[in-house]
Structure formats: C-alpha cells, structure tokens
Image 1 (cartoon, rainbow, N blue to C red):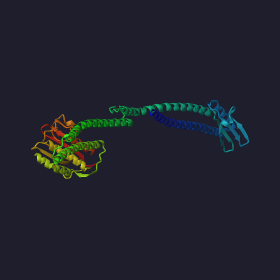
Image 2 (image 1 turned 90 degrees about the vertical axis):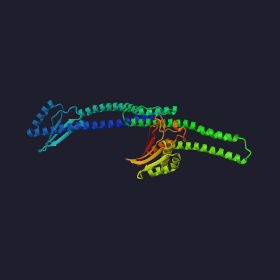
Image 3 (image 1 turned 180 degrees about the horizontal axis):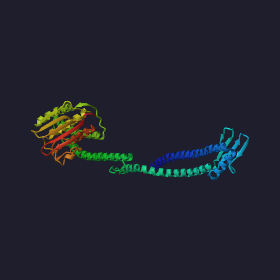
Image 4 (image 1 turned 60 degrees about the horizontal axis):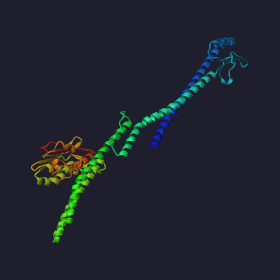
Length: 441
C-alpha cells in the first residue's frame, strides 16, 4: 500500500512537472521567436531608412554628395553600413569599408533610381546573431532552472495535496486495525473538496459509531430480554418432561397440550421481538423496501381505530378521531398502518379507565400531521430522551405487556419516509405523539 501511494504521488508530481515544463518551454520558444523577429525587423527598418536617405543624396549631387553623406554618418553612427552604387550597370563604386565582414552575414536592400542607377545598402547580421546566441544561452539556463523548479515544486505540491488523503488513509487503517470508530480526521478549514471529503468521512464515522453503539445496546437488551422467555420456555418443557405420567391418558394429553401451547406462546414472543428488531435495523440502515403509493392518511387511521375499538371499550377508554379526507401522503401503506397501530396501542395501553385517546389527522403546509393524545399518567422527564430507544421500558410500563420496541419501530419507519416524530408529555397530564410526513416523496 505504501509503495502504491508513493507511485501515485510520483505520477502526480511528474504530470504536474511535465505540464509546467511544457508550458514554460512553449513560452521560451515564443519569446525567442518574437525577439529574433523584432531584431530582424529593426535591421530592415534601418536599412530601408538609410536606402531612402542615400538615394535622395545621390539625386541631389551624385556620387560625391552621396559619398560625403555616407562618410559623415559612419563617423557618428554606432552601426556600420555597406553602401554601393552601380552607375547604369557599368561603374560600381563602394562607398563604405566592409573589411572583415562575412559576405554570408550581410543583408542587402537595393533600389533602382529613375536614371537606372542602382543604390545598395547592406548591414551585417553578426551583432544580431551574437545577441541571439547569448539570449539562447540565457534561455537554456532559464529552461534548466524551470525544470528543476517544476520537479521540486511538483513533488512539494503533490505531497501537500496528498497529505489530507494520507490522513484519511491512516484513519481507515487505524479503524480496521483496532476496530474503534471514535477516531476523527481534523479539518483544514479551507472549505475545498478535500475538506468536504474529510467532513463527509467524519460524518460517516459518526453514523457508523452510532449504529455500532445502537447495535451493541440492542444486543445487550436482546440478550437480557430473550433470557426470560427462553428460560421460561425451557423451564416449561423441563417441568413437562419431569412430571410423572398420570393414570388418565386423556388428562396427560391435555397437560402436554397446555405445555406446548405455553411453548408456542413464548416462541411467538421471541419471533415478534426478533422480527421487529430486524424491521427497525432495515429502516435505520435505509434497506427497508418501501412500496410507495398515494395513501389517504385518514383511511389508515380509521383502520387502526377500528382495530383497537373493542380493546378501548373493554378498558373503558374513549377512543375518538378527527381526520381530514384530503390528507394524502406518498408512502408504504402497510408501514403507515404499523405506525398508527403502535401509537394508538401505546396510548390505549397506558390510559386508565375513564380516560380519553384522541387521534387527529390534518395538513400543515407541505406536511401531513398525525397526532395521538392520551390522558394517561404521562412520561417522566428523565425518560423522555430514551423512549424511542430499542427495548427501553420505563418504570410505569413494566407492569404492562409489550417488548419496548413499538416506539422504536415508529421512529424508524417515519424517518425512512423522510418524516419526523415528536413527543410532548407532562407527568399526570398524558402524552401527545406527533408524526410529521411529507405529502410528496
């Protein structure tokens, strides 16, 4: 893994250096070309300008005036010029000293006058070539310096860019080695893509740690809560096996039937607990399959109330509902029925005889509200933050039937639908659970 990281860093540095050096060399070539073109253009302008001056001098006074003009200018001019006059193609007069000049390095421009006289002006390119030669040497040194800076800068920039990624890698390695998810990668505070990736990584670790903590707590609770029904199941079976057979075979069969019925009941309790825990885990992890369709929320509540009407009447609890028919949500009907049933079951269970349970369905802006109120004993303030935890049962609920999973399932299903659930309660004044669901998916 370390070798792969070094190879990736080297490739990234080489790509950076190659791009930088290529751009620099292109700029050097363009600079050299523009400089050479500018010097050549300057020489041509000088030659053409002098050619015009000498032609005018020749026209004013012939070769004598032209020779005087050439001598006067070459005494004060910083650059020597080659001047030649050919009189009608017959007589050639050289009016400048061109000793030591390389004929191959002279640029000459000619002009034919009206009387047929040819005037030529030339300039040596040696000075320009020498200047360009030194300029090339300087550019070569600069290019070499650019290559060194590019390689060094590419390596430094690559290491700096890979440093946050290396920290993420080390954090992942530490987690995989120790199994601990409490490590976090510090943010640079730059707000760039690496910071965003680091923030998402830390958020993922927070969620993983929360799920792991919840799973450990659930396993602890499950192991504790399963111990009782499994122990009772085993004890019932052992007592049936240990009991001496009675003289009446029919009575013995009936006894065994009762024992098996008790075993089935305890087995169902265990299966319901495990299935509910699996549903909660699927909802919380986002893997629960939801068959979304337009569902009238009032219709769901009506079905749940019909289911618990007899239970409420038998207990002496008034169960009422106020539901709007136009409240429609895009959700899984079966899961919403579980939500409504659990909330109503919970309210009826903890409301004493003579109390009331009211269910309300209405629209609140872009959301649908399902509120279940009861006049039960309420929830103690110290238990409110934990009522949605798996297998949590408060002191007042220990005497009632239940697994402590109903509210956990409600919360998981509602949040799987991008909704939320809240509770308001005061001891002695009942509780109110409010489910808020989006009306559009």
